Amino acid sequence: MKEEAMKRIKAWQDEIKAYQLALTTMSYDRLTVAPENGIDYYSEQAAYLSGVLYSIQTDPDIEKTLNELKSEELNAEQKRMIELHLKDFDRLKRIPKDDYVAYQKLCQVSEKKWEEAKIKKDYSIFEPYLLQVIAAQKKFCALRDATKEPYDILLDDYEEGMDQKKYDAFFALIKEKLLPLIHEITLKQDALRTDFLEGSWDIEKQKQMMKVLQKYLNFDPSWGYMGISAHPFTSCFSHNDVRITNAYHENMLLSSIFSLIHETGHAIYEHQIPEAYEGTVLCNVSMGIHESQSRMYENNLGRRMSFWNRNYDELVSLWPDRLKDIDQETFVRAVNSAKPSLIRTEADELTYPVHILIRYEIEKGIFDGSVDCRRLEETWNQKMKEYLGITVPDTSQGILQDVHWSDGSFGYFPTYALGSAYAAQFINAMQKDIDIDTALAYQDMASIQKWQKERIHCYGASIPSLQIIENATGESFNPQYYIEYLYNKYRDLYQIK
Image (cartoon, rainbow, N blue to C red; front, side, top):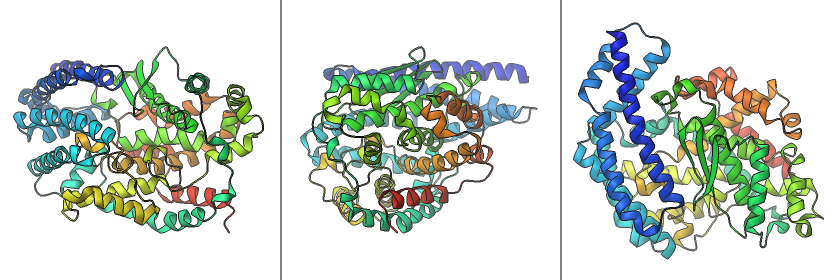
């Protein structure tokens, strides 16, 4: 019985992954190379495939088999696999198929309208579709579990075990400890030199620098590929086919550099998850842990002096006229500078979690009714002014700057800040085992990636994220590592007593 049942589950998983691969490929092409005029046909076919996939994922015979397997003698990975599959069944089967497919179509149109609205800087183009997406998500949450707070359901979708109570406590620390520090640093903007980063930076030379960094970070073309998109992202097609994208801006050199480092952190994680998990639900890792790996690369490693020991000379060689008189220390201090700014993806390490705080409070308000959904743009602008002292000049740099809400990804944003906190705790543990600065200075990313693989990546989704943190660091999740890391780093950098 057990062996036959596991074979049925294996065949079912393979079928799911085939459709998911098709949808991933279509999505990647849509965001990178597909012609704009093909979006309508693409949207229809993607919605159709999503409907077929829905039917496969909610097959009642498979659900019965999974429940029967619960009484069999299974190893820990098999038990976890069944647990995660049944959770997905419970999430999907409560939503009627017609509603599910209609929602997929809505999200395709919504994303297109978001793109149009952002280009035209006109929120009114996108607003009606966003309101429909919000209404659909509220309906789905009620269908899934009417006894739970809707936003708690969504938060758990992206980070297992997290809810508003836990996030409230986390963001309260950010408000208490970091907002006053940001205010102090805002008054000391002359403490660090950053003027040399202004001006035009040739995009072809930026692309040459990306090749240098890819090699340094062990992003190998035998299993990895980098394309171009408006918003950098990572897609995992398989263990040996992980694709990232980057975006290039002539007036922002650091944007492409740190986007590459960030997305490579995601890619290394996907590549180092055990190959035995390929095609199974055990590859579907937590978004918080995933973000911890990208933020670790971008900030905890990529902004260190030792990281640039091997890379700064390469940068200077591309722009000798611009950088020959700028020493490495001045450059590294500049890439660590902090200043309240408009755009989340370009935000410095210190102000970044405040951008997430703003989105968290708005999302929470959307689902508990404390925020008027017809005044979201106004609410956004008010919070940017309240927390960061920033006046939003237009909607493309305000509520329209992120794509996430167009496809109903509510509950996703908080994992970005949570992942940064996980990263600080991981780095603290890693430093006890590895001389990180020596490894970076001598281009020994292999030692760092080996530690990640053995302490974090090896688990995939076979255990919950909070257990991964405890196994890797020897203690439960403690956000104080993150707060103290930022607090000490920036007080020292800006010489605040």
